[in-house]
Picture 1 (cartoon, rainbow, N blue to C red):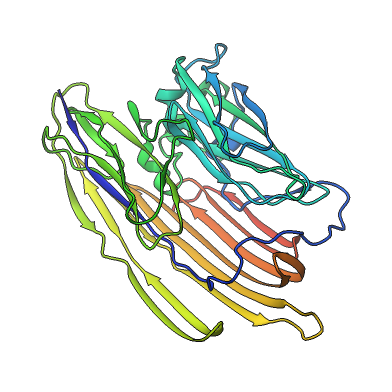
Picture 2: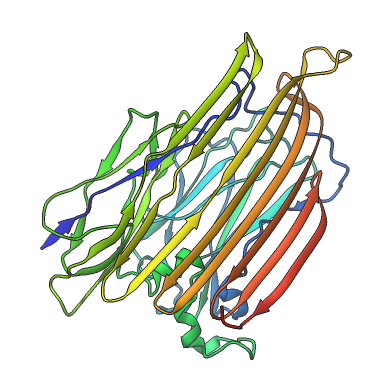
Length: 443
C-alpha cells in the first residue's frame, strides 16, 4: 500500500533593468594573460577532502559544442567493483575547460532522472579558462549502488563564427570506505564524524535515504520541467510507502489519497528549468508512521515598485521580500532558519559625447546567506556575504571598456570544525585571499 505527496514549489525573480537594455554582451575585453586561468568559488572543504578515496572512476567525458536543440548526452553508470557499497562518502568532481568567445550556459547532471548537480559555466577568454566543482553526493547512495541507471548531462551550447567556445567536461566519482580513512589527529572517530558530515541543510540527508524518487520530465530535453511563464504549470503523481517516517521535500503523511507534485513560477522571467528529488526514509519495522508539521509559514511575496520615466529616460526601484519558516518533528525536533537578503542596484547612463551610440551600465550586487541548522544536539552555522561593483561602456552588445571589484566572505562552523575564507578580486585578478584553517572546537 502507498500514499501520495502534495507539494507546490514557487520560484520567482524580479526584473532589475529596463526592457531596452540588452541582457547579453559579446566581444569580451582583451586578455593580457597567455595561459589558461583557473576560476574558483568560495565554499567550505567537503568532509571527504580530509580523507583518502578508496577508488575513483571517470564517469563522463564529453565535449559540448553546437548542442542546442540536441538530446542530452547519456551513458550507462554502474558502481565500482573494487570498492562496492556501502560507502562512508561519495564525492562528485566536475571539471570543465573552454577557450574563445562564449556565453555562460546552464548545465544539469542526472542519475536515473534524479538531479545530482546543476551548475552554470563560466564565460571563457581567448587564452582559455578552467575550473572544477566538488559536491558530496553520499545522499544518493541508493542510486549510486544500482547497475541499471544512466548518467545524463544537458548543456545546450551554440558554436558559430561569433561564439566559438566549446566546453570540455569531465566528471569523476570518488568513493570512500572506513578502512581507508586517514584523518587529522584532531578529528574524532570517523564513524562519529560520519554522522555529521552534512553542511547546513545537508544534514537533512543523514543517513542516506532508502529511496530517491525523481520528480522530473521525460529526459529527451533534460529531466527538468521547462516552465514558460506564470500560466504554465507541470505536475507529477508519485507513490510513497506508508511506512515512510521521513521525506525531503517538506511533506505531511496522512492518508492514501492521490495528490500531485506541482511546479509553477510567479514574478518570473521568460522560462524556468525546474525539477526535484524526493528522498524517502522508511521504517522497516512498521507499516505506518504518523507525523505532522510544527511550524509552516510561507507568506506571499511582497513587491514594491516605483518608477519615473519620460520616454526612455528615468529611474525605477524594485524591492522584494519574503521569509519562509519550516520546522517539523517526529520523535525528535529539528529545524532550520535562513535569511537571504539580496540587493541589486542598476543604473543606465548616457555614454560620452565623443563615443556616439554608447551608454554606461553601472551595477552593484550584494547578497547574504545566513543559515542555522539544528538536528538534535548538532548545530551548524553558515554565513556567506558578497558585494560586487562594476561598470561597463557598451555599444550595441559590445563592451568597449569596464572595471569590476568583488569582495566575498564565507564562514562555516559546526560541532567539529570551523572554516573561514575572505577574498577580494579586481578586474578578474585575485588581490587578496585569507583563509582560516579548520578547527574542531564546539560551537
